[in-house]
Picture 1 (cartoon, one colour):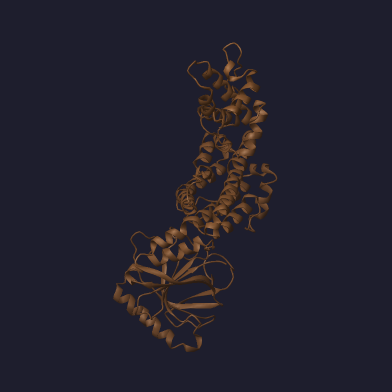
Picture 2 (cartoon, helix red, strand yellow):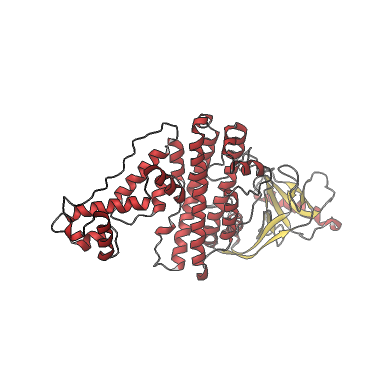
Amino acid sequence: MNWIQCLTEAIRYIEKHLTVAINVDEVSNKAYSSSSHFQLVFHLVTGITVGEYIRNRRLSMAAYDLLHPDCRIIDVAMRYQYDTQESFSKAFTRFHGVSPSKARRNNIRFFHPLSIDITIQGGFEMSRKLIDEFYWSNISETANEKTGAERYKDITAWALKARGKNPSVFDALTEWILDDTQWTDAKLAENEQILMQGVLARFKEQNAKLRSYLQELEPSGVVNAAVFKALDRFDEELCGETHNEYLRETIAKLHTDFTIMRERGVRELIAGDKTGPAGTDTINIFGYINILEGCDSGVQWALFMPDMVKQQQQGFQVEEFEYRTFPAMRFVGLTFIHDMDDAACEARHGDASRTLDAMTEYKSDFDYDLFFMHHNGGGVDTSPWCGFFGRFMKAGTPVPEGYVSFDFVPQRTGEAGPPFISQAAFAVFTGDAEAMHKREGFDSDAMYDVTRNIILGQGMNIPYPDKYWTAEIHLDGHDKPSTGYLFSVEM
């Protein structure tokens, strides 16, 4: 939808809401634009400001209401959103030249609703709908009379719903950017409005409002401080100051010269690949839209994950949680065979434990039996899951015959998969072991979900999918249930 049509929608919205409070931000949403940009365009197209238009229409309608003999001035003033009869009378007199009590059919002015007849043909129906599909926050509608905890709960509820909806909209945005028919020279200017104003600028506005709102609630002690870190990162990316070295030059140029979007290769770098509704699919091209989707999710996770983590701990609890950077090390172990029964698994894990026990000179400082898992640097939905019984040993440990090994280094190197990064969140659990390993209602099991969700709630980066790994830790030996968990992070 083009700008003229968007303005028409905004005017229709105003006309339907003349007797209730109108927020300019809500009106600008109808034009799929930031508030400041919408007000500028409205003034350029109509010759008056949004505020003047609303005031002119209300005073016109108020005059017609006052022609009815049973209408009281105070009632009309309240109907058209004036705080007092006095302020209404002053505004009415300035507009009509007569006071409300002297309004007559032959001495009142009437400002008719604007009708913009110019139309611009174009293929923007999908992109217009796309912008509106994002689950934008409605912070201004939150009741101020609520407690800080109640107001924060409203924001976390929004975040949870946004997390369920926004990934698919980012995927649609990727599709639109990669659709060559949408990127002719004739459409470039309006596409710039859609992407830079309708999406990026609007996210900036939402972030600014959210930041201000959370800072107001911060003294009540309910705000997860990690959300400010997530907002900082999101704002940097929205301004073109990306943390991604590979995309830095392209993204910076996008923000200064939108004409680069004529090139298919540039648009592929901006769009990236679709990530799926849950944001978990493997992607071949990691683009700017993928970065923005990750930043959006980071803000939402920081808001609702802490409460979710509390709710998920049923029958068990997290006793310890910390982030560790291990020195270079090597995992050595035996491969898990998928058709093994429990007894065979225990026996295989026991074999690994006894073999590694004998290699005393190669023991690491993290000398626990564990079950190590990874996806070879691919996504959980496309790359096979691999599991291994073994231990973390010193770097360079010789690998016994029939065993496998994977190296770990403190910093990212190389392509996807090994060597993995030896940085991880370490969680220790207490309580009912069966509850810790419960799978129903969890992505993997309870320990996995709780560990991951604490990480997300604290704004830490999981190096998914290329360096992603996890490990169940048998803190009391391989023959006892695992009660610890390592989850890969990148600090």
